[in-house]
Length: 114
Image (spheres, rainbow, N blue to C red):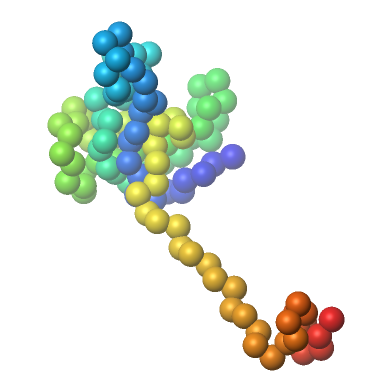
Protein backbone atom coordinates (compact mmCIF):
# COMPACT_ATOMS: atom_id res chain seq x y z
CA UNK A 1 0.00 0.00 0.00
CA UNK A 2 1.43 3.35 -1.04
CA UNK A 3 1.33 6.01 1.67
CA UNK A 4 2.79 9.01 -0.17
CA UNK A 5 1.81 10.47 -3.52
CA UNK A 6 3.60 12.34 -6.29
CA UNK A 7 4.17 15.94 -5.21
CA UNK A 8 4.21 15.25 -1.46
CA UNK A 9 6.89 17.03 0.57
CA UNK A 10 8.93 14.54 2.59
CA UNK A 11 12.00 14.42 4.81
CA UNK A 12 14.54 11.60 4.83
CA UNK A 13 14.90 9.95 8.23
CA UNK A 14 17.03 6.83 8.32
CA UNK A 15 16.50 4.21 11.05
CA UNK A 16 18.04 5.26 14.38
CA UNK A 17 20.28 3.27 16.68
CA UNK A 18 23.38 3.49 18.88
CA UNK A 19 26.95 2.78 17.86
CA UNK A 20 29.56 0.90 19.93
CA UNK A 21 30.22 3.99 22.02
CA UNK A 22 26.54 4.44 22.82
CA UNK A 23 26.07 7.56 20.68
CA UNK A 24 22.64 7.84 19.05
CA UNK A 25 22.49 8.38 15.30
CA UNK A 26 21.87 6.47 12.11
CA UNK A 27 21.74 2.73 12.74
CA UNK A 28 25.11 1.05 12.11
CA UNK A 29 23.43 -1.19 9.52
CA UNK A 30 22.80 1.84 7.28
CA UNK A 31 25.75 4.19 7.95
CA UNK A 32 27.65 3.04 4.86
CA UNK A 33 24.65 3.06 2.49
CA UNK A 34 24.22 5.81 -0.09
CA UNK A 35 20.85 6.77 1.37
CA UNK A 36 22.47 7.66 4.72
CA UNK A 37 24.08 10.70 3.09
CA UNK A 38 20.60 12.21 2.64
CA UNK A 39 19.55 11.90 6.30
CA UNK A 40 17.66 15.05 7.30
CA UNK A 41 17.24 16.36 3.74
CA UNK A 42 13.85 17.57 2.53
CA UNK A 43 12.51 16.96 -0.95
CA UNK A 44 9.49 16.23 -3.11
CA UNK A 45 8.30 12.81 -4.29
CA UNK A 46 8.47 12.81 -8.10
CA UNK A 47 7.92 9.15 -8.96
CA UNK A 48 6.69 5.97 -7.26
CA UNK A 49 7.69 2.38 -8.01
CA UNK A 50 5.06 0.34 -6.10
CA UNK A 51 6.76 -2.96 -6.97
CA UNK A 52 10.42 -2.24 -6.41
CA UNK A 53 13.03 -4.87 -5.67
CA UNK A 54 11.66 -7.66 -3.47
CA UNK A 55 8.20 -6.06 -3.64
CA UNK A 56 9.20 -3.05 -1.51
CA UNK A 57 7.66 0.24 -2.75
CA UNK A 58 10.26 2.88 -3.66
CA UNK A 59 9.87 6.66 -3.90
CA UNK A 60 12.04 8.90 -6.06
CA UNK A 61 12.68 12.06 -4.03
CA UNK A 62 13.89 15.22 -5.78
CA UNK A 63 15.88 17.71 -3.67
CA UNK A 64 16.43 20.50 -6.24
CA UNK A 65 13.89 23.10 -5.06
CA UNK A 66 14.54 22.73 -1.31
CA UNK A 67 17.08 24.49 0.90
CA UNK A 68 18.80 21.70 2.81
CA UNK A 69 21.37 22.05 5.56
CA UNK A 70 22.76 18.68 4.55
CA UNK A 71 25.27 18.45 1.72
CA UNK A 72 23.48 16.04 -0.61
CA UNK A 73 25.67 14.32 -3.22
CA UNK A 74 23.11 14.36 -6.07
CA UNK A 75 19.64 15.77 -6.73
CA UNK A 76 17.44 12.66 -6.69
CA UNK A 77 17.45 9.30 -4.93
CA UNK A 78 15.13 6.32 -4.48
CA UNK A 79 14.03 5.65 -0.88
CA UNK A 80 11.97 3.03 0.91
CA UNK A 81 8.72 4.07 2.55
CA UNK A 82 10.10 3.59 6.07
CA UNK A 83 13.03 5.92 5.36
CA UNK A 84 10.91 9.02 4.63
CA UNK A 85 8.41 10.98 6.71
CA UNK A 86 5.89 13.61 5.68
CA UNK A 87 6.74 17.26 6.39
CA UNK A 88 3.14 18.40 6.01
CA UNK A 89 0.90 18.32 9.06
CA UNK A 90 -2.33 16.37 8.68
CA UNK A 91 -5.48 18.47 8.83
CA UNK A 92 -7.48 18.23 12.03
CA UNK A 93 -11.09 17.31 11.19
CA UNK A 94 -13.71 18.34 13.72
CA UNK A 95 -17.26 17.04 13.61
CA UNK A 96 -19.73 19.91 14.15
CA UNK A 97 -22.11 19.34 17.05
CA UNK A 98 -25.89 19.51 16.74
CA UNK A 99 -27.21 21.70 19.56
CA UNK A 100 -30.87 20.98 18.73
CA UNK A 101 -30.76 17.27 19.56
CA UNK A 102 -31.38 15.97 23.05
CA UNK A 103 -28.35 14.99 25.09
CA UNK A 104 -27.22 11.47 24.24
CA UNK A 105 -29.18 11.43 20.97
CA UNK A 106 -28.03 12.34 17.48
CA UNK A 107 -30.08 13.78 14.64
CA UNK A 108 -30.17 11.98 11.34
CA UNK A 109 -30.04 13.63 7.93
CA UNK A 110 -33.87 13.76 7.81
CA UNK A 111 -34.02 15.77 11.01
CA UNK A 112 -35.61 13.09 13.17
CA UNK A 113 -33.89 12.14 16.39
CA UNK A 114 -33.27 8.55 17.33
